[in-house]
Length: 462
Image (cartoon, rainbow, N blue to C red; front, side, top):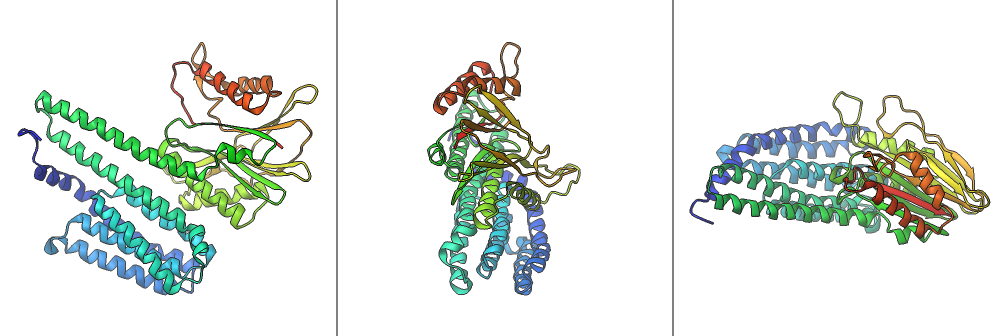
């Protein structure tokens, strides 16, 4: 560093001054919410609500005492926040250890919300994140050994592994946010410095951007590990393709697959938003589908969407208040009975197409319910439909990213009409060729314009 550089002590003091009030507020909110959440314990786990409440009372009480006496004890607000989060995490580990599988699955989302909230709110040094993650793992192991009636496999597959993945990702999210905030304060204090210092800071910004990109790339690897590859997906069908083009590194579109006996289940989904926010929604969607179809063994596609909607509304605490997030997803659930050659489907907003290529090529449109899978002012039960599949039928499901892409001579949308024409024109070709031609049509239409949304198109033939 040059002599003109701002001393680290001054930067740290400014950082503390700027973030102290925010962390104090976050501590108060966390202490209060931890006590309020005992209502959920009372309503769902009546046999344990008393010890749960005692644990919550101890955690919130100790955290409150430390928060009020932090100046006398010479404890930083980051340590106060850390003690509160660590206490709640250990508290959740104890709760997990006495739960059966259904309650463990429900509470897993509360545990994930804790880590997501920490990742979005707190700003502390990397070592505190690693200590928290390590202590959380140790606490879960200890309480599991003492109390849990579940096998290790049941404990891991019903929430343990997914929660650990979210917690591990949040470690890097906190690290990135901390460095960005710290360096932003440093840069602001150095305004008016010489050109050499400005150039130096420019290099730091480039480096920071690389760190953000690296972190988001890590998030993509987590997301892609939960979404089947095109090869894995295609193994279940006579022929298929998946055209999957995220707008950003992390996608808000996703697809999912499950097979049971002669039944093939697959989903094509478009979550609210794209990038990191959309990526969080895809993780919830994938987890909900696994729970509803694999764990609860629900087979009716309309019921699957109804349960998905309930879980989204409950998890995101949506009740229609003004300014509240309306996060959800447009999603098509397809269930194929291979023995009967029948397709059962239910869809939120996005229709599906079936093109028959034997004889005259005919495209049939199967409509969706005009409501999202999430909070909606006038939502109704999702409708299940049955379609008898004929030889030569090819099924197409998709998000709205392809028809909504701007381009062409006037910079207009591609539109569903042109999308259908493109599918019809190429429907008699092998799916590998169809995918190439769809992609080339999109690129040609898009030209120099940026991609405006995630793109997902799936074609299958049973």
